[in-house]
Length: 70
Image 1 (cartoon, rainbow, N blue to C red):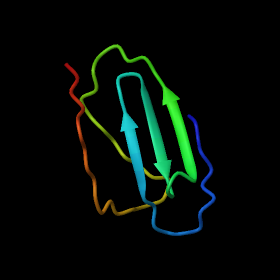
Image 2: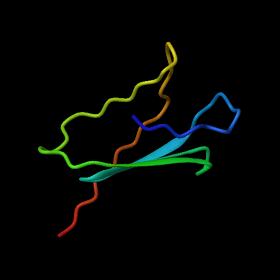
Image 3: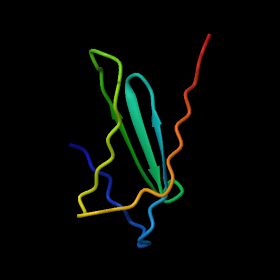
């Protein structure tokens, strides 16, 4: 498992996630904290899970946009 140490001290976490067929990039705190993972799945994605190492958290907003290429 990879980690990206967070240097911001705010208790609110705002971020963006970019996911494609073979990679995921996470940007937090206006790009101050960033991590990229590359993978090669055998089947297309069907689920998304968001977890925290804290006991509980609140997700206030989630937007998902699909890019379609011809």
